[in-house]
Amino acid sequence: MDEPDEEKQGIEPVKGRLVSVDVLRGFDMFWITGGAGLFIAIFKLFGGRLEQVFVAQLEHAEWEGFHFYDLIFPLFVFIVGMSVVFSLQKLINTQGKRAAYKRLIRRYILLYLLGIIYYHGIAGGLQNIRLMGVLQRLALTYFFTGILFIHFRLRGLIVAFFAVLLGYWALLSFVPVPGVGHVSFAEGQNWANWVDQHFLPLRKWNGDWDPEGLLSTIPAIGSCLLGLFASLLLREKSVSVMKKVYLLIGGGVALVVIGHLWGLQFPVIKKIWTSSYVLVAGGYSLALLGLFYLILDVWKIQKWAVVFVWIGMNPITIYLARNFINFNDLARRFVGGELQTLFGEKIGYLLLTSVSLGLTLALVRFLFKRKIFLRL
Image 1: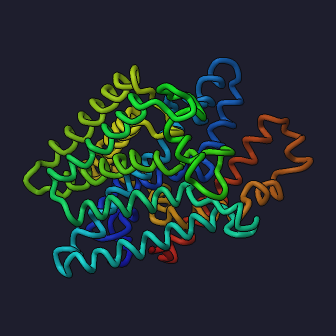
Image 2: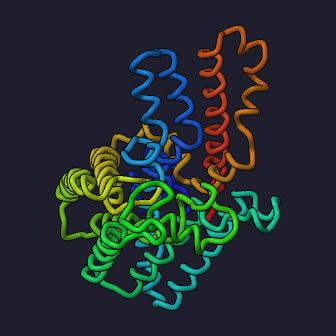
């Protein structure tokens, strides 16, 4: 990969890269590296209905439904799907499928092991190892999407996408859940949870099932394939720039509508990654990509996004850093104690979240300026 190029308006990190993809990745990570906490603190200042509405959007839906924060994880899976094309296409063309498999397997193993470490590894004993988590799901979706990309052309990939979503829908919608006796989408009583209860060993996030569990990883591959399709579109030279924008934004809006309509029968549920959820989240992901592509790569309005580039060039690094380093505790050393009490609960919380996020941004800026990037 080429070295960062700081000549292009001080923002484009690497020659030949789409700025919009790095910014979208950084925008996504921003919310889980302190951005959500900052905006929650801001909305708490207003109180009342405004606080209730917007703070709820920065939290996951309890079960059915879709909040803004329910977009964060599938958006990253979507971006991982885009990276499949960027990382494997040239390798397949120049060195063949065997070389592509080597890279695919190496990245899968490294990312999966980082996921194990993220959830404290073996510190709590072997029985407390979490086999299925956020990074593990990213690793698995990248791996299986990569296999599909290596072996199938576009038509085969589209067939795989529909097979994944429709097969999952058919199982959950028409096959009675063992022990329940009927079809169910309810928490703890659906097929995804049942598979975890009976076949997922060791630690599970929700007691006897995991929101990043075994069966629900299958439709997540659909989210990854949507990112792959978006990447193929952006690389297609026969399609004009503005047509790409229209297809991304228009297609995204269409998927959101179709997903919500499907949700009338097959509810939109993040914790079991329903097929309707794939379409809703994927639709928003496509639309955001189209908007960012238009602003950043077509119109070249880029200076506003420099912070997101810092984050987007080191997403795994900062994700792990927020796990290993307690930035909120560090922030309390600057604005905690009597100072926080002096300003009151709401202003004090705003100060705390602002400093915590500021420390995070200082770290990613330092890494970017020193050209330090974690490459799997």
